[in-house]
Image (cartoon, rainbow, N blue to C red; front, side, top):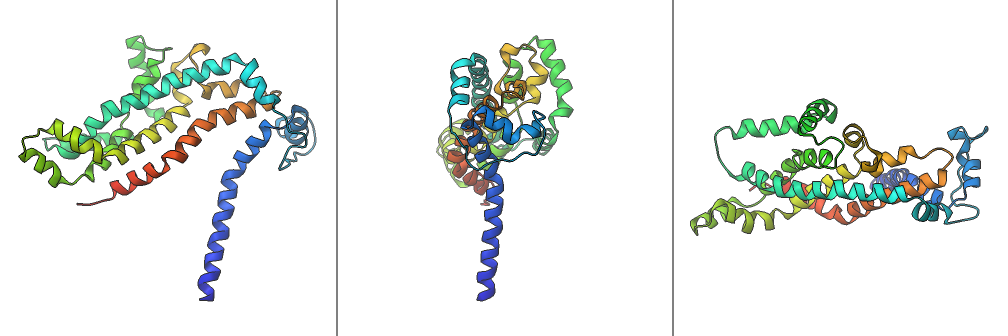
Length: 284
């Protein structure tokens, strides 16, 4: 009994240490938004080469201020331009992934046709390939279509991504086949069965794909860097590296605001991610 309590305390201590390590950068960033520029230069300036000495970070700022946040929101119009560019590129991707990927996932999950295993294997291979392998074909196709340096250069490849199809197909696999067969006996075709049975029961997998797709598109940096040349089309992921070391407070505020939508979506969508993972592991 004593060993079990000791082991439980040890596990709790380890998990608490891991949680602290994960949350410390967020606290670091939050405090940085409230810290005056002079204090930031004194505390972390040596790390960025702004002065000599050792970096010392305090848990709380000595004199809290909202100046970095106010400067970002009121004196940095390019931040809002790139924020809306990010929204323009991300939300159509997520919506398109559902509109295109959900029917494809249902077909791969429920239809029986020749070459299905080969097609599924192709999906798996394309899903496992990193972007660095596919960027040249993507670039050539987009250049041929005349879509480079436009939002569609980011949106279209994201819509036809294979990973959301894989997640949603695993979610549709959890739909009882008996319900689909009963609907077929009642005269419902495959598409009505998809709309009336597949979509309602496949919500966990669909929402999981949407959450993961949003996080991936929101934080994308290689695709915009390669396909977008004009700064007027850049998303926030390309704006942050442009902030110089002398703008520490501005950098902290911009990083925090960019992180906020993804963090909130993950916190509210965590249960759907768990349901999607559970549904993908169910067997009839």
